[in-house]
Length: 136
Image 1 (tube, rainbow, N blue to C red):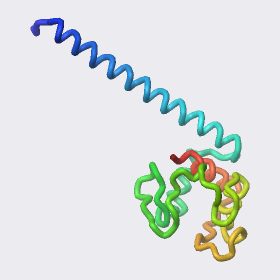
Image 2: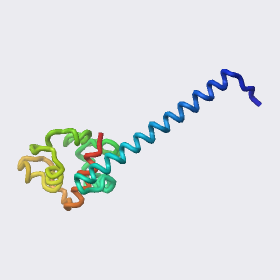
Image 3: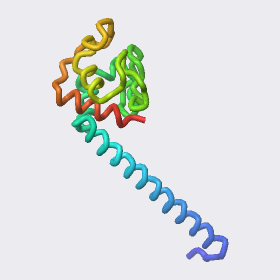
Image 4: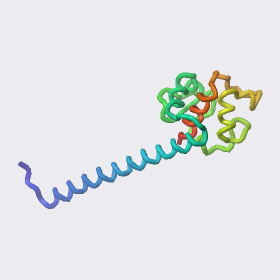
């Protein structure tokens, strides 16, 4: 049986504190992510979890880098990180309404847009918009 010394006790306490702090940080990060998801759902009317699935299913990953989406390393279109902090989407102001419209029919906003119409329904576009606005 190992002998418990003051040094070993201090080390054990330090390890336990590190784990506890790490758990607290993880809880805050998860809590912040849930708060962000609630906010984007309120402004877009979309479901960010379904939006994440749709960006894979509709081929967005082939043209864009998308954080937290495996295989999303395309270079044809712009990377989609920090989309919520951008001023413009294409040539339109970055508002939930314009993003949803862009996702449904990019060329209705910019006739020269390279992005194709991938056939998203209104609700699917809302879901993708909600997901995109959660990206850091």
